[in-house]
Image (cartoon, rainbow, N blue to C red; front, side, top):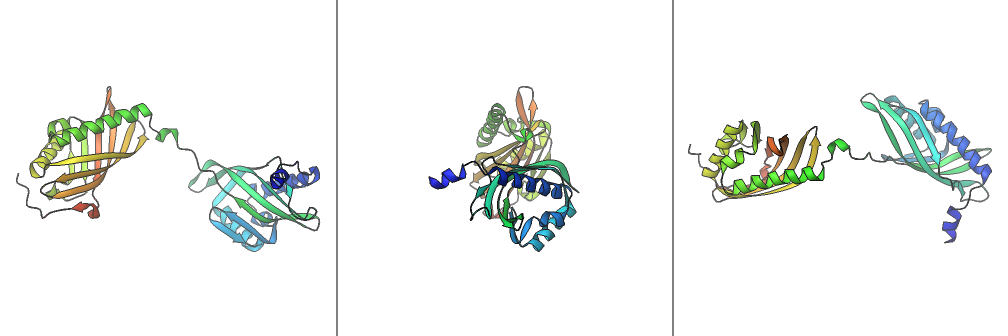
Length: 291
């Protein structure tokens, strides 16, 4: 309780004024891309800790900033200091600590402009009439998920309903019902050899023939578990883990990416890419497919 009370005390106005002036000059150095000016704010044995790890010593910190500024330009770099800081942690006012937030517009050769922000904490020390950073730690707040990538719960239910129809038709060995879930120009791509019913099938008719051949060759039962869904423009991409167990060739476990498109009041499959890792296939010896 005493420690907590100390942290929430109102800081000394003079010390806070010094910190805010310090912050203003540091902001200027970052906005100007001046590595020398930015490093001067650190003590000789100062430490900078960021999302890539610690940098030890003023000279190394200067080199770090120089590398950053070669690739990235910061503008509108703004630092805010939490209202209860700085707080004294050393004797008299020789050491203090503070926390706050930062934000900036960031541009690079293949970046931005994008808005970045995060949090920081600092321990500073007095050196003569100036204050120097003994240790600065900062992070970057992850960007929230893009609204364009989220799937509406109602749409998610509709997609999962189509997926259930797919599994039901497959487990009834109904190639016609399966094909009806695809668009006329749909494509189904499998990454295993054509002589094992892999490769590319283009168009609803070809897809129906492929499934019919599957059922004639190796009738089995499917389990399909959707693990992720994304909005891609107006389409929906669903990632699923699939397992098919058949009497002839054993168990096939694959992952599939399925793209669904809106068709009137339902959804149709436009493209499926099925990936079969070799480690997920437990096959019995194959015999040639009889057409």
